[in-house]
Figure 1 (cartoon, helix red, strand yellow):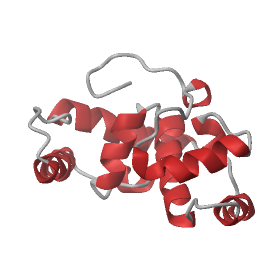
Figure 2 (spheres, helix red, strand yellow):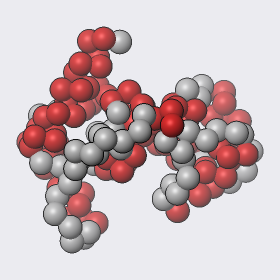
Figure 3 (cartoon, rainbow, N blue to C red):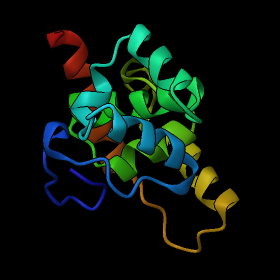
Figure 4 (spheres, rainbow, N blue to C red):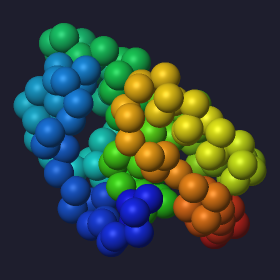
Length: 143
């Protein structure tokens, strides 16, 4: 589900197409390896990540960032844009999200939006933050 409340497809069916340009080399490496979904990125092990990073211009750092996004997308059913927002706001794991307060999440994501000077209204409000935190806590108790 995206912050706006609309249903999004599960991570295993969301293609990696149209990643931000900062991940273009990683996108090429993933495509060359036949990895075309967020679930495929999520399940990469350390050896596979290292091989992908050595295969071209992709960096291990960016591949790990994409993997962090994939975990949030697949495990918590977040939209890719929402996972990217959390990652860049410093909430990169399910446990970090579960340990957050709704106000902290709104503050962090709002600060990032202001730094980016997006000019759009905040994406994360208190109810959205609370919903994401509850998903993270629920996921931790069931896994």
